[in-house]
Image (cartoon, rainbow, N blue to C red):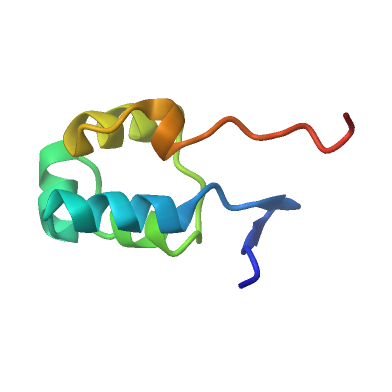
Length: 80
């Protein structure tokens, strides 16, 4: 499966976000309401259309109850 690219970068872990939501038992609407983000945003993040902002990452981690580094692992530097 190819990763979607955003401005030359691979979209960060959309399948991780979808899996975390699935295992939490929450719907996209519940995630949006509980994290106070726009209703369409969680779906777009899951599909890898946009990278999550720092604030969105914080809110999603809190709502889903998953450690940040598990849900959004640090990106590896391709030059090293």
